Length: 375
Image 1 (spheres, one colour):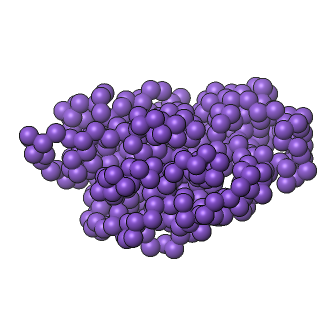
Image 2 (image 1 turned 90 degrees about the horizontal axis):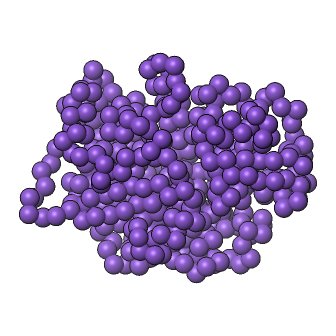
Image 3 (image 1 turned 45 degrees about the vertical axis):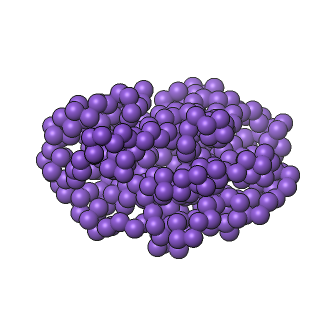
């Protein structure tokens, strides 16, 4: 599936017509822009291949024009992996990047690149899975096997290697990793026997189950205590334009509240704006709805876990201590050979997380629920 980029492929008039057809405009606020004031262009790179509805904190502010109301023309683009996203920030071709937390740690500790977390959007919800019909019932039985991964630079590979090492295997010699991409190609690789396991994040595994796969899970329970998917910016961007960083993160926090209040509203809006990203292969509309909501449910749970693990008061909130735990994990797993001050991983502006949560949460929740009930 192709992602229709927000800034170039979805004219406002067509998007509004689609939303009207879906009966959603009554639930969406409007705010006119000053005609003579051009929108500022902003680009956000996302470490994924397909921007489907499991990225509501990034896609809803585009679909609902929340960032436009802040004077921003935001383009959200899939770039493959976290490494590519970091490289694009450093090169200046994007302003923000959605990364695995391990990439933030590695950038600072190993490459002295000042990448800062500005919003934690999930915890480590990756798992190694195989088919329930597989003879593999213990992690040790993956010895000599091939495991499919999103790509060879994916942040989840670190957890896979550490998990196998903790279970007596040498991840550099006892297993082989192959890049399968995501979605149907990865599942077909497992079903055909080309790989004997898959290592993926929660919402993608939910997608495999949507396709009828019965899976056996292998994961370390401690992973749920680590931060993972994180919206980030370079320190230079934060220093140069802190207001921009706050606007982007506030829109993402607002969209998070919206998604929590009504996942189905997210589904309806996303389908109207980007129909090519809806679940493919479903035999009928009801099944397609169920599949996409199942994938979104897995993503929302990771977001709730991140919220709860960081105090349960502010969406997106994270701390140096949380990222320090990730750094400790990576050092113990010999993924990095030195540690840095954990404060270097997280934006340090006083009151930042309070500011990005400074909006009418109840009004956003009511808007989402009204949208979900509209027919």
